[in-house]
Image (cartoon, rainbow, N blue to C red; front, side):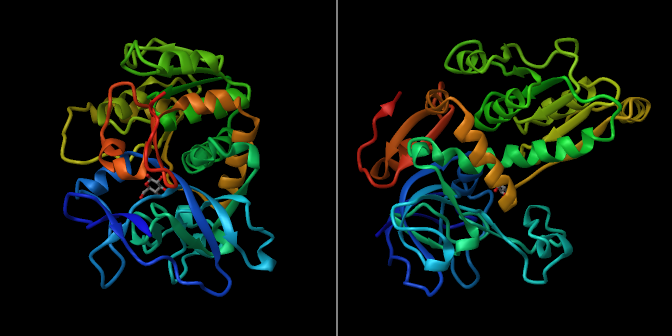
Length: 354
Ligand code: BGC
């Protein structure tokens, strides 16, 4: 079968012929339908992130999955034909207190593994297998957009953590600001609107699909970056991973504000920060700043519910390019009006831009 293969640590990617998954007792065998491409995949392809499985130098790429069950153990509750996605992270072998409790997204010792990222082959293949407890079923009507489940799980976790932190406040949050109208930012805005918050999204473009996607949610789009006085937000979800934007987000909240950082940024760029003023503002205003990564099974389930409740035409509009497996290079390019690019694992030709 064909798979998207990288050598972590070295730039490059290839479509390689590799053996299909071995029939394993207790595993779910899945036919890959679609694979979402995100910034992490591009970093791995650039040789700047990612780890091959121990004793190997090649890794099958891909962690944003969608597939159809071919065979499943009876006890799994899954049946041939079901639409599924695979969970990315596996608990560390110790396991730490969080991994032991099914909260591998909050692993304490860093020895977790991740499909398509860290020491485990990913879902970028014509077929893959997965343990039933790491396989999430999706309603059949999500066939064209279910590939958004993994990024949606990231924001479902972020919002669950925000809710827990907001519970300490005297008044529930009313206004949310999301920085960045990429897939994570847009899905964060979707979940914000779904929980009834007045929602604002800032980005730095005024054209392309982003302003319309935000408006269609009933949220407000700001196309000139984050200006301090733009929005008086109780919650900020930072989804660009740009250092300066993260610092601006931290200083843009009011008293009792919550800032959730979700972007995994590359290091190596310094910016001047008045650390004393920043510290004073956070202290005097009881601001909470926290980072959020990955997702536990419960967040995938919440995300599946959120996608099912969303306008499916809106979710489809977020997928701005679908590319066939043989046009992998095009999938990895970043084009001006891209929001989410998806590789079609069971078709060779893509339908290009939508
Ligand atoms: C993935 C997460 C993963 C993180 C760090 C993100 O792109 O969506 O599942 O935990 O990268 O590797």
